[in-house]
Length: 148
Image 1 (cartoon, one colour):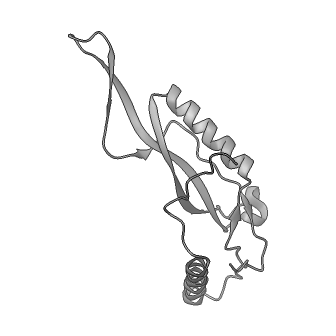
Image 2 (image 1 turned 90 degrees about the vertical axis):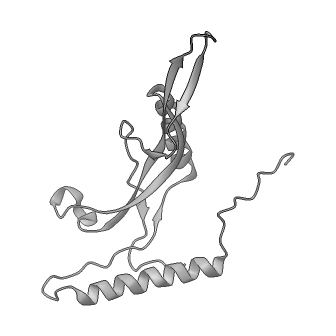
């Protein structure tokens, strides 16, 4: 490889990832204990998988569509959600999910009088881009839950 990619600054150790996963599993177990015992609880998965191809395709989509909608797409925010309790969602009903939402800044163009060109003016804080669809439906790890 001629130009290997730079090592991302957000990397964590495997050991810390394990601590995060154990803490998540403990917190979910504590929440279940606090719930009413009347309702039969389904065991939830604690991992969601997306293929590299799906992620790359989504990134390409949001960058392209975002630019067409006048945004500088600068990231993806990950949200936790829970599927509605209805037949439409079958085995996913009531289960945790993770969905992705593109973030960015609206680019406004202003024609300056002295310089007959366009200047990009951007707000400071990136926010969710409402005109682009979120991505969901990764593959959930089938119970029993995965352990990192």
